[in-house]
Amino acid sequence: MSILDWLFIGLLSAAILCGLFVLILFIQSFLTGRKRAGLQKKRIKNKKKRKKLQRRVQKMKKQQWRQFRSALLLLVLGGALGGGAFYSRYYQAHRLGEQDSNAIVQGYHLVATIEEELGSEESLANPEKAATRLRDLTGRLSSYGTRVPSQRLSEEGQRLLSRQYSYMSELGMNLYTQADDLMVNEETRAAVEADLKKIQTHQQKVLTYFSINEDSLKKTN
Image (cartoon, rainbow, N blue to C red; front, side, top):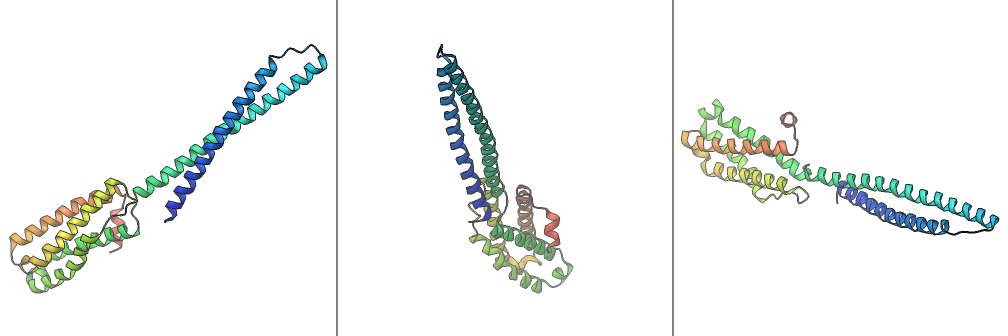
């Protein structure tokens, strides 16, 4: 398990313990209050015994207040711990793990490389070499078909990544079968460029959802 998994378990466990102690202290405070109320109803004529009873009532009053105050403090602490636990889970559900992060970074650069290749004058002048270079990318692109997003991510995050991986895999298959025609057939090249546009559009949704800075991706190229 990751550090965030342990953090979530630890914070949630601590919050539950706080909740149990809060319940116990509130019950104790209630019982102490009932007992104190019962003592206050007693009517004792003996002055010495009456003072002793009053001291006991005051002592129980202070005890009840301490119990109630401790319960409130633990309630606040438990709320903070519980909030921290669920925030850590929320953070984990909206942040890419190492494998998915590497896949998105690699995919970003693969798409940029293909786009650059298609628009290169060198590729137009030498379509055979361009086809060879593009075919070299098909293996990495096709591998996206076997990728599965982390189950720790939110449902929306998993859906976005699954679709992105599917688009990348489809692009790889198209490049493999159409590489020879890309630079000599405008219709084929237009179809691949349309696929690239679709991937880039969806890619922006992924970057936005997971709060990934595109400028940082460009610097890693």
